[in-house]
Amino acid sequence: MRYALCVMSRLLNPKTSRLSWDETFMNLAILVSKRTACKFVEAGVVFIDGNKKIISLGYNGPTEGDYHCIDVGCAKVDGDPQTGELKRCRGAHAEVNGIINAQDTRRLRGATLYTATFPCYDCMKSLNNAGIKEIIYYEEYARIKKGGKSTEKENEARELADRKGIKIKKYNGKVYCDVKN
Ligand SMILES: [Zn+2]
Ligand SMILES: [Zn+2]
Image (tube, rainbow, N blue to C red; front, side, top):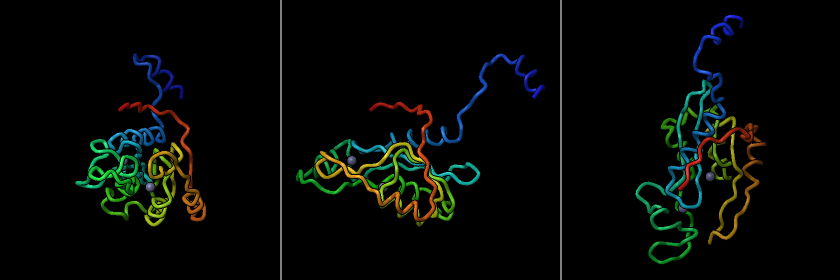
């Protein structure tokens, strides 16, 4: 300690702090959510192993080769680009894409998930089967209903996590990403 103090007194750069792991990975999850091609939902995830190494990243959005919401609107809110008929969301969720991006799902067993948005029930099922042990999230999730006028909560996701003993923590740290459209 005495050595550290004596070293610091001769350093020119006053920087003495850095991002915590939580700040690093949550801000990364929020940043990657900005990659989405959806107009309404920006969701991003980072999966981390026990040594704080990144296993994979994921964000929500239309699947390979499908229409992009930013080009033609969301199927659930703006309707089918040809007929205007309201349809189901064409996006894959960030968590599922993150699981696919891990390439070998054995790497996810025991992993921690940092996610900009609390997982929906369907994703929680997949996270449970992938063996995720801890979830750190920033915002609550509410599913947009057809037409985009209202949302619904999914309490089943948290119930499943509680039943399985998946640790859940709300991130209350700083958010540095302020990427506007
Ligand atoms: Zn969309
Ligand atoms: Zn989901």
